[in-house]
Image (cartoon, rainbow, N blue to C red; front, side):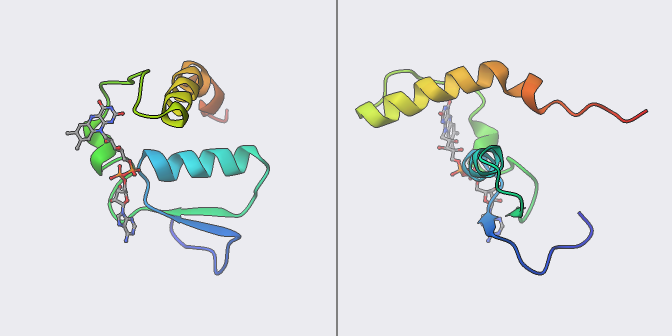
Length: 87
Ligand SMILES: Cc1cc2nc3c(=O)[nH]c(=O)nc-3n(C[C@H](O)[C@H](O)[C@H](O)COP(=O)(O)OP(=O)(O)OC[C@H]3O[C@@H](n4cnc5c(N)ncnc54)[C@H](O)[C@@H]3O)c2cc1C
């Protein structure tokens, strides 16, 4: 993006899995002016190291629910967010 908006409803700092997930879910809920700021490159932080394990059993029930939701989401995310080039 060459220029940033002067204001936004929400500004998310950091384009790792958490920031991208917050942006994804807010826009899915219909929020329009969501800005995500990344200082380097999307997923260049610890997310870059974490393409391996999506463990299903976590330390708490809520973390386990989150892991289950993530695994289900990853099954459809690529198709859902695929950008179709304009002709
Ligand atoms: C070696 C390693 C292996 C791992 N393996 C796994 C795994 O197999 N499975 C798993 O589930 N988890 C794994 N993890 C843990 C996982 O990587 C993290 O829990 C997860 O990536 C955290 O995501 P995040 O979005 O909070 O942080 P990050 O991915 O670090 O994102 C933070 C982003 O914020 C940006 N940023 C910081 N400050 C600013 C600023 N002031 N302005 C703008 N941008 C800023 C950074 O550049 C970065 O892109 C692993 C971690 C490591 C280090």
